[in-house]
Length: 304
Length: 304
Image 1 (cartoon, rainbow over the protein chains, first blue to last red):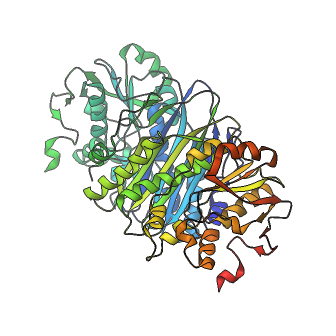
Image 2: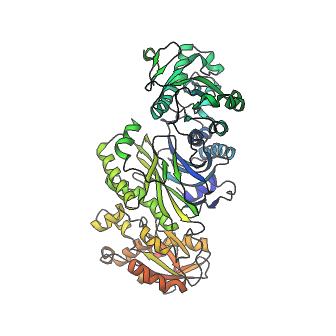
Image 3: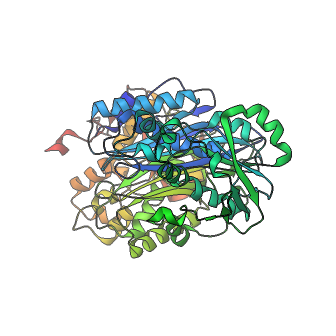
């Protein structure tokens, strides 16, 4: 594989912005770093057949590989700046590369996040992206700040991506699976109000349990308030609820807002987030409005 | 695969230093960044059977995956600080993981470079490491600064790793292949004197041609001065020279020193680098002491 030609042809995009001192064409990338900021970085690998179905369009693979990383920055309240790409390909498939590059670039451009380095190798299809962003010093949004009385919120709707994995799902849910939206716009508001935040990649209950564990608190949920898309509202409600509670790959933000900040927060976030419960002092327990206990994988009766 | 347990068991090492504000256990890593520095970053993927023989010991794979990235920082005159690891494994092989983790940690500790995040996935064996380091603002060592009259230097000896790939090679060359030494100690001296620098990963002539192209200069070499190890000195000299000129994976530094700085440089670097030629004004041409022309892959008669 002629690595250099591949990079030249598919991954040389616009002129880099001024904060990139040295980009491609040297041994490493040199990046300017503004004062008063901290570096926030996350890396995720996507493997064909594991993290996306083998038949996923190349454009969607390019989008999703960056989106899942941008979502991690959104969950930290960070602003994305740069990313690197380690791309392993079984062969040079020009149609695939064009689609992948287009999907990746469209999302990168949207968030002004620049490709600053990478490595292409031959092997089974695998994509590792490391994203780097900035946060004001000491202001990163952690999982560990939730306190009893804080309200629990989520952005968007839940369970769509899990439904999108089913062969009979509608286009909306397939789109939600293939083109997740990193909630960076919402994050810019949330970061000034939230006490804790995580992105929902493993499933709502699973990721909620990460906040509860890190913050040593519990949660009481209003399950009837869980935000469901029209697609899920039209399904069998037991199945829809199972997907909303335990389905992965939604990449919505799950966060907690102290009660005294809630009113002001709501005037700014408007209808882009839904309150779905309240933090309490229980030891990492999750209950619903009827007092029934939920585990991080759902109600026990979902396992039948 | 229980990702969390794997990370806990094999990749939770010492307490992180104070410049790591948030390490594992949140959505991303938060790193403190000193004033007056630039961020230098490089990513490399190693695939089994492509970048190292399938039978390479796990300990060596762990060492080499980090070493090739540290070598890129050395070539930039940067000080390594942090790295992330994207590890894809076909199965949980505890012996392999222990060996890999030990090899990785030993080298990371030696250079005070800390593992600050990662992702483990199931799939064909592949390792992507992104290393991050610091350089004084505007002081990164590029490929583009060589000028006519500058002396050409290399660290260490050349061709050992290429010989190590042969089944009949001695232990020294196998060790050089499996445990390359990133030349960070030498880099700390070189960065204050060199006009251009690269690390030798593709082969001496190939990497020299990168400097010549970036600097728009040529080179006249003293091939009899090429530093060879005892192992290569004892081989057929035509074959030894071929490996020294074109063999990859040496991870020595190749750099240029302006004539007026050479004397002072030599008193500090002592015997850790060898002068092997001089930069001239020719258009990316490489000649030997007899005026014979070399291509980036060697003499033509090496192709017979």
